[in-house]
Length: 252
Image 1 (tube, rainbow, N blue to C red):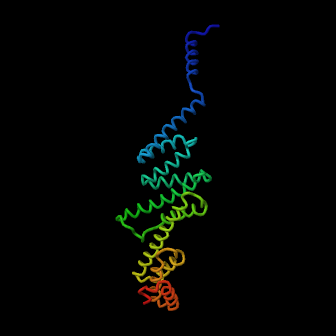
Image 2 (tube, rainbow, N blue to C red; image 1 turned 90 degrees about the vertical axis):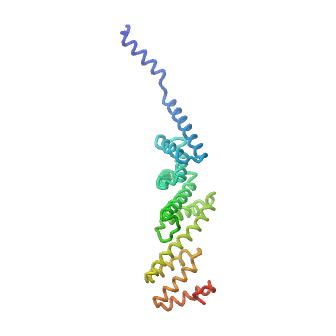
């Protein structure tokens, strides 16, 4: 039986279209080729220092192709791009998502390292917003978070290539935290709140005793105990200060 002309034309058109359509495998290959091309473009931009444009491309790729052979590297490079553009909130959000979804990834030490760096940058940006000078009497949550991130590398990934740098950064952060605690103690002393001041200084002595703030902490404790007329605590602190810092003006 012959098909009617209209039906025949429709049948031929369907056949032609079917022959030209891509198979699922061909579509996947085409998508992967597109992702690869765009990803290599982003990598070139990163190498050139164009972090803003690289972040735009990587963000689009991450949203459109969250799975695939390039997905993890796209996400890692996106974290780095956000960090370099001072977009610390997006960087931290991307880091936390990566850690949650890929806790056993072979580059997980790098992700913790980037979180530590990002927290430090967030803290530094906040300081710069406060007249561009170091301030030790502000919230130091980001410093504590960064310290914990670097400490994770030291404890969980001691063989990491980032461990040495993480340890050095922890030294700086501990000294900053100690300095901050003593700035608060100083604030209390100016207002006659000597109990609070002594407790802050004592915290530094007990928990941050390997920083360069120990002598200052002992001085504050000594003055506070004198003002509070706590004779025994004053004498004990005096002896410790004299033993460790015999040239200190308060023991001469």
